[in-house]
Length: 181
Image (cartoon, rainbow, N blue to C red; front, side, top):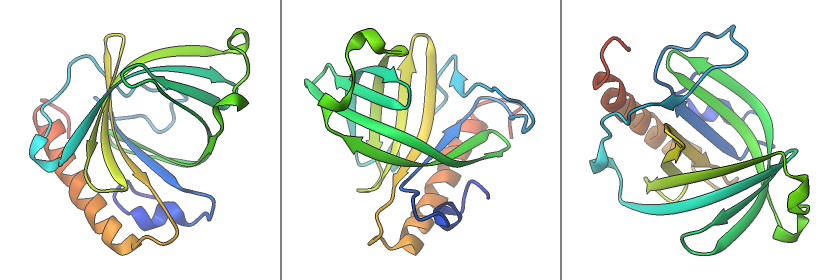
């Protein structure tokens, strides 16, 4: 699997979400843990994005269930991510998953949470199914491209858009950093 062929991610019928993370350094494929957080935000190609949404989120995690509360507009969402596959390609980490939405009441009481995260997220819209996300948590920035698949989508067209956006993002992000491919 490579980071720029969208069709290869959907060989599993359960997959509905792909996230491609842009990491600050080349990743070691044998490592069990690696970081995709940036200390400083690199140059971003703002001309690629049509609109953006600015959010202040608090996420509570209980096992594989996440309750997300948007403090900026009082919305809430509960979802579950099931990992299907992943891949490392130089400085990029790609994760393929099945993401299911659940009613908010399905999340247990807050005394049973494993983790709490406060995130400032800016979501840039590329098209109705593809978004470039920039998260700031504590003093670290995380950037990733997110695609949400539906069975009735023209995967060839989406793959063409994906390849173009990945190429432009890589060029902008990594050419503003010295010593990174």
